Amino acid sequence: MTDAVASAAEPAVVVPPGLPILEAAAWVGHACWAELRFHETLTRWLAIEADPAVAVTLWAVRAHRAELAEAWHRRLPELREFPRDQFVRSSREADDGFAALDALTTPEATSERVDALTAALGRMTDHYQQHAAVAVGPADAPVADTLRLAIARTQADLALLHELVVRA
Image (cartoon, rainbow, N blue to C red; front, side, top):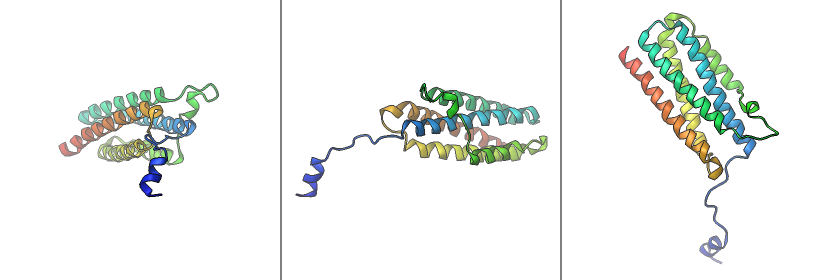
């Protein structure tokens, strides 16, 4: 039997399966937690930011993070055995990254905050883009839609931050 005949006899997988539901929910929950944590950090930074232009940009980025946190929360499955909120949690790596952001509390650290936020959002974009390859199939379509939104919003936020750096 030739390879062509053998491959024709085997069923073709048109759409590969996505992650099992609990793994997918854990990923979405982590994304929700991370966006909430960005929002929390930016709220603290806005209380100490002295540069009005930076404050306006941080305010816009903060609003986008809140929108994305809400969007991710809507994507969590509604399972009787697993309440949505139990999926919204951090990882050790994320805790360490946000602790570094939270340490930037002096009013004079504006450029350090902008640089740190730019790097963190860059990592977030990479994280979202890597997960886009896993969010496949009809069941993952809402997550894939939210990923596209999250990537676009995060890239727009990076562009806003880049404008601050160019202006400075």
